[in-house]
Image (cartoon, rainbow, N blue to C red; front, side, top):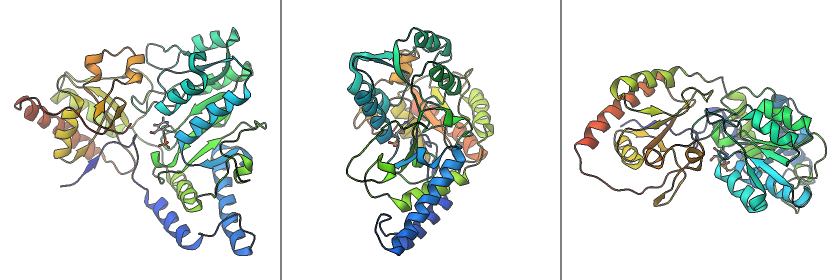
Length: 381
Ligand code: PLP
């Protein structure tokens, strides 16, 4: 049975270009790039070249680019940096729809000094409300993601970057779900930017972070001079070269498959609700509220037919909790239990999307004729 993978927002399969770059670097560029001999200088040169490619893609100076282990590390490090450098007792503004690596880091380092930013009717951060809070000088820093991992809803990060800059407030944008799906232009206007290679077809455990143009004193790990002193530790050169190969291979995504799926789904399961239908959102994502049956039952039933999809909520082993994202958007608890997230990527075809709609209709018939089943699973977000 062919597996149809529809969970790209959790992780993407390795692109062939990334795999080739990783294999070649693992074979040929395994020396420590900081070692003193000429042979290692060659590895260092490849690393510098990778950095300048990334700097070119984001139109920033190479010194702004820090390679790391991914978005969770960078998100945590940025809040730790703010906690260490912003004046005591200052407050920070955070979107309540952020990824848990931002929500938890904000709460860990700032506790009750986090101001949760208001959302508009579409589930995006309300820019006018944020401008108002900024103008009252209540915030010392702001963190708002570019695109939401559960709903695909886009924030107007460019307007947020401008508003923050006007008040001299540092702005962090978690662009993990944007990079690889939408153009990178203007992302350099965010002071701090985080991204993860495995979301766009690079390897897992590798990521990048853009730092402010001015010297911020940012240090995520200490104990070595790598990454201009911002992040100590021997660089994963093969992983970084594979990430850059994936980034260079990215082409502009199309909503054709997702939208054809939604039309078809409307025919075969008309009671399905689509979250954020009216909002600007990622062209690869659909967050569905199924009319009946818990998410886990759909996930299991679809997997038996070869389709891998996710729930819309934050989950951990054996326990499915409510999604803070959907809760912040005012989705009621019962509906959250029936959320399904489907997200496509570089290897998905329009035919795959249409096959998914047909499989969902089959699963509904099957689930309707079956007694209630199990309720726990492991779901990545
Ligand atoms: N931020 C967002 C928006 C994500 O979707 C993810 C992925 O799970 C992360 C951060 C964490 O990324 P990583 O897996 O690189 O730690």
